[in-house]
Amino acid sequence: MGDVNDQYLLCTKDGKVLTAKKETLRAYDKQNRNKTGQRWMVKSEGTKMAFILNENGSYRVWKVDQEELELKPIENMEEVSDPCYFERQNVGSGEHYGLRSVTKPVRYICCPKGTNRLRLTSNIQQCVHIKDEKI
Image (cartoon, rainbow, N blue to C red):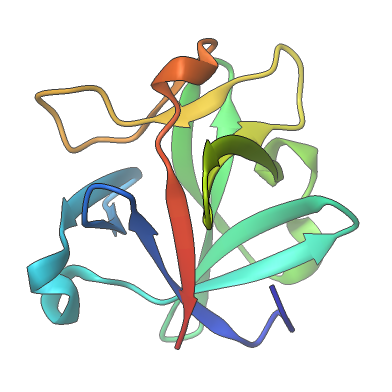
């Protein structure tokens, strides 16, 4: 991952793109990527990274809030703190990786079958496999 001003499309191994919808994160079919694929900025700090959506100068960041994964508004990049950071997790899937929270208890981002909403799980086996594509 590069500079915080770089933008990425986040894709899953099963052909979906990660997209914000209200205060939740969703995974939609990749063939509609031009309609649904949002461009995410990534703020890196060592091995940690935060995913930030810039919508006309308003920022929203992924955040672990107790047992939920939410999108929360922030005023500026200095407001990004540990509940907003994730670390790449090797899931044995080539260029795809899983994401785990840096806060305790450790949680992984997953997308349960039958839904398109991203959630948190304690089971790494349920972790969604993600790949970033620089735009």
